[in-house]
Length: 458
Image 1: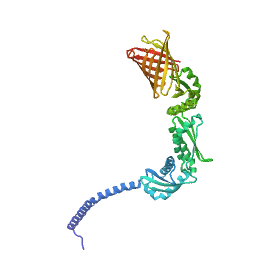
Image 2: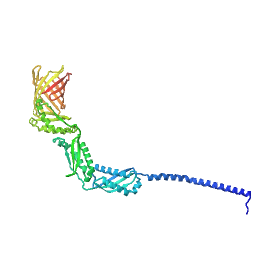
Image 3: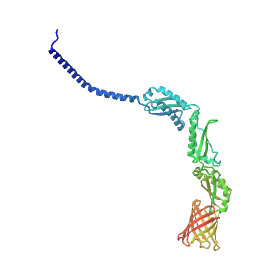
């Protein structure tokens, strides 16, 4: 068997080339077919690569505590404190962990959390604890209170800084808040007072400040010899009533007779001393009622049938204005000095009357110093309510006649309108009481006459 010549070599070269081209073409065809599958496979790989880390990195971001207490819930503030304590512990243990991993390790993690809660929330034992893992993981806790457990406890209010006669009023103002204070310890284990006492004391201060404006309080929980809450009530700031002044206002009793009783009125108002100004402003009606009862029991008031109404002007120096009117005999002495070119002459007036229910018949003597003349007149007043008086007056000689209406705007401000039919004039007077003795009056008539009058209430 021999080797061929050149013709055979050419033949084999062409065959090799033909085979190489065939292999190249076959590879190209295979590559074209495989290219159709490579792109979907790459996409699938990328999706899997993207999803796999997300499932592995599904961390817990928030913890929600769902609490149940066997035997009944204590005060909401106590529950909030327990939930906060469990929530803080659970957050440190769980937040940032993979939720699936937490689910697989629940037994170990609940054991750790149970042990910590038993130590932190004194007075309670964890009866059951479980998780509901997720981005927001629910922690389900059931607690059991350890004996002994407190029931409704008494509240003892200490008012050493308040005058003994004013203490019943302060206690009456605080009375609506006592049930809330009693409920602060309801169904609370005694052992829990180790951490709950501060919550109770802080809430006691808030309740007292809300019930009695101007006051604050320090609460103290005592367990021996028996459980109770001791509340020490004091003024909240430095604005308290430090001094008391007295003023008298009367249209039926001369000033010289009323002013001598000022020390007794100061004594009646002594319980106001030391009260916060804000509290006295809020309870002014009650304080006035207290002084009114004392005035009604005052022997001269009872003996002479005097109606005395106190009005308080509250401040660090508080004034008691006593509106005193006799229900029997009434007397008035006034010196009237008029200023103005159109003003009538100065005169002095003395009135004596007798009260018959709301009616008061009276007689009046007027002395005019400039002419040394005397004028006599009689009149009748009718008291309408506590602020208004209407009446009529006529002179013995028939010259002086008037119908009038007087209205008290305040203890120191009065308005009076009178009609003089003989001369057909309406006279209007606005009076301001400066003090117990003097008053200023502005007078105007329907004829355009205006003057000022100084009245001395003797």
